[in-house]
Amino acid sequence: MNATTLAPPMSLEDAVKARRSIRAFKSTPVPRALIEKVLAVAQLAPSNCNAQPWVVHVASGKTMDLLRERLVAAARSGSVTPDVPLTSTYKGVYRDRRIGAAKALFEATGVGRDDMEARTRSFLRNFEMFDAPHALFLFMPSYQGLREAADVGMYAQTLMLALAAHGLGSCAQGALSHQMDVVRELLDIDDELICLFGMSFGYPDHDHPSDAARTDRALLSETVHFYD
Image 1 (tube, rainbow, N blue to C red):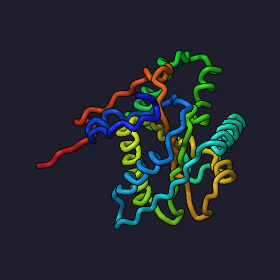
Image 2 (cartoon, rainbow, N blue to C red; image 1 turned 120 degrees about the horizontal axis):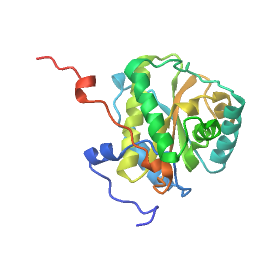
Image 3 (cartoon, rainbow, N blue to C red; image 1 turned 180 degrees about the horizontal axis):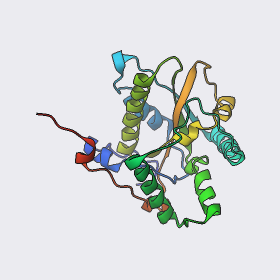
Image 4 (cartoon, helix red, strand yellow; image 1 turned 60 degrees about the horizontal axis):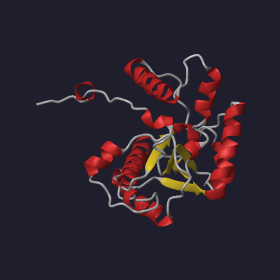
């Protein structure tokens, strides 16, 4: 089966297990009909009072090439212009989980702890969107708040599962919201919208070293509390 053949969708449980952050993509574009299909599935996500606050902008082709070039340049310059303030500090177990994820990726890709050049190169891969042929940016109206941001998160998860069910990979990236001046210059974004994060997607490149990176998950007892 070649990359553009439409495989039958997976079961929900299999899609949940298959979904993970992909950090290397093939250059093969995803057929527009398939992109629209998974977006239509995501549109069924729940939201508070059915407000459906998400607004999605999808980039492909020449637009992707320009985004890649300008986002990398902005990241190299140290420019950071997010619509939503970045979290400056993670504490305790949340910090430990982030460190563990970075360690798994660095070990898979051969990035040494003290190799600053390699670490910088790994960081810039975020803004290259891991060579994905497509990326999307998730927006919501600026006057809305945390409840609507949660709705956008549910939409994004539904979308990523739909992508996984059809053999596609994705990577939800906060980094793609860091240089919003670049994104707004290239995309027709309503001034009343704010970007929460972006997402690279396409056909995974399983031959890339990053494909070997795996992260663990907290035990149920660490995150869930039952009351009888």
